[in-house]
Length: 197
Image 1 (tube, rainbow, N blue to C red):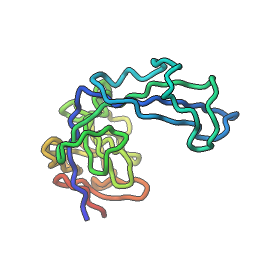
Image 2: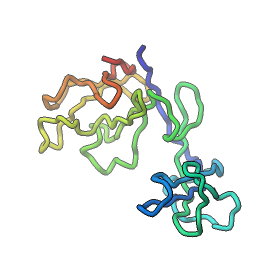
Image 3: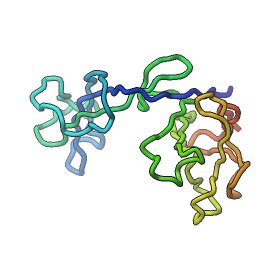
Image 4: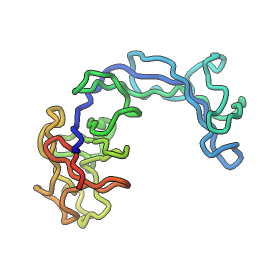
């Protein structure tokens, strides 16, 4: 069964969490990390950092993985994500919780021209299995590694209209036939649908 794609429209709102974490060889578990939802507010995503009063009682106290308490050391983080509106349902989501088929413009990548299409945008699609595919990026089996102009996948259509097709029709290399392979899924993006091989 194909997965229909849908567009994510960026809003001027962010979702915020209070996050505690530690990492290193001396930690009680490999993923000593916890987040507590704080709120949704107007703002920009780049406010993430140690920017919240440590005396706030809402900070996570216990790691959900090893059930040990966080000490006063380690990292304190106001963790923020941009909120997007789904074109198909109107629901509001962050990139942390979008389902398969979501497509969006990774605006923070616009300065890296080799990861953008001819329209200057860096379009990403969430594939079945949870992988994020940067459509305008380089394929692992690219046969023109030194050529920064060609595209391993050529996209056609308009992401906002959910009619994207990705193939080898354009200035491309000879890697593959336009499909994408990630662990657990192999398929094509045709006319706004993710189709398994």
